[in-house]
Image 1: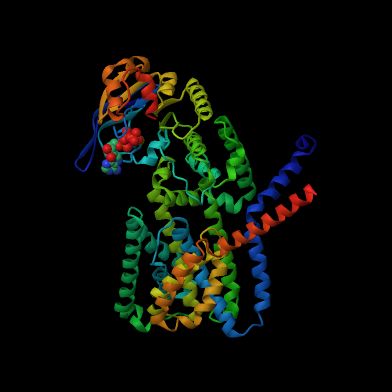
Image 2: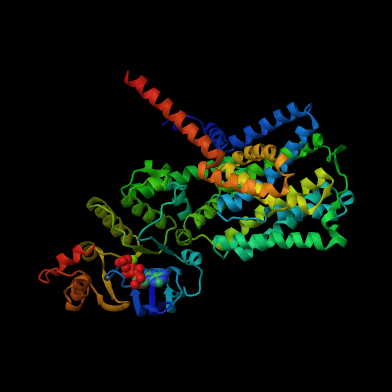
Length: 341
Length: 266
Ligand SMILES: Nc1ncnc2c1ncn2[C@@H]1O[C@H](COP(=O)(O)OP(=O)(O)OP(=O)(O)O)[C@@H](O)[C@H]1O
Ligand SMILES: [Mg+2]
């Protein structure tokens, strides 16, 4: 009725404004991140380092939410794929080819290696996929340790210093200027994937393969694509870690890191990119001490993961939703009570 | 329309379908009946490409054998399930969107870079859903409900709506009325008849004899993995061997009034 009286232009703009609704989350995130970065500029170095690492793990974990959270495929190779990205920037002449091409190369390398696990694993049932990714992770580790003439073996390999607009990225103060917007971008990307046909196909295939097939989902293709996307993000995260540390070594990409990433995804919940980012910050803080206890950390993570799965099946996002639901329910009840009165 | 010739399905040592041949004519509703375990669902699974089989299956003259399940959907095949699963983290809208994703879809780059276009697409999608749900006698309010919270009769209806979203040329239904009440069955009957008028071909597995006699143009009776009878429903239900096949699984029923006891087998 009102649409007859109002002009087409108005309706067009209204539609556009409504269209912005799905991006409110990422927009809010970007604004928060900007405020955060300003506030951080005076923080001590250890805090900045933790935030930097949290950004790195957040990106890798966002990749993992696609494979593990959406597609339900348990991948233990995400840290190994990070290594692929890290060694890519370590081994190319970073200072001559430039930052952006180097990051792109790392993304492509990560996507390619991860895609391999997808091609092998997409056809198999999920526990075989987990085994395939474990084998892939072990294969990557063996190459890193044994091909010491190229990779530096267990001593690792130095990474050339890079700067962006004259700011040295090995300094966490400047690193976060690059990393936080990248996290925001990746979170937005994953958010959009989740809302799209791709995310829906993965979710359906995870829930019931036959239903998905009957609806016309190309399951193998979607799953392989998921591993490729996830690998691209892991490659990017690995490259960032290498640039931040000025060094890559196999110990940064071991099982401990793989489990940390899984834990972030579980803790963050599969349904929200924001949850993943929050979980990355919290768990990176928590694990900074633990990562040093290389041996025990695996066990601690394992137990923590189990506890989380039992206590919070929906992760942080699930808790958030539950709380919102309760609050909403209370408000609604209050309103009806008012109306009745 | 759909031609199945000499179809054989084996699970390990079990020979579940033996030399089954069925021809479904365009624009007809073709019933597939038979006692429990006679291989009806298996036949549908072979058509969908879920199980390995020998023999040929053609849809509009094009061979389906060897095509992956999702490609068969692209060739105009839609199907529903005897017991549709209800994943908790999917809403009714998700399921319907999944149903139409081969013909209309929301791409990630639309969501990312043209949110207003995505919103428009969502709006159009909501209208299509509303139409799909109301035409099957369901309330559009169900759209945002999670599938796990839907009653089983509604779920079967929603599964049919999902299968219709892609606008199939052949709709294959696996016992759609089980779990539905009389009113829902009536709604479905009317809808199927309307769809037949508009050119849809239907292959329906059904236990409810009244529904079968009312809406099916032809029926095929399966028993023990082979074809027992074929023809117009009223003729087929008069045949003693068909009656026997049904009574064999339902002991203790008097053979005096066959159609009534047939009805009970649902
Ligand atoms: N995946 C499978 N593996 C082994 N045997 C199977 C499989 N699927 C079905 N069968 C067997 O094939 C036979 C036919 O089963 P089917 O589900 O096709 O029967 P149906 O006619 O649909 O029965 P109902 O009326 O109970 O739905 C049964 O004996 C069943 O045990
Ligand atoms: Mg069956």
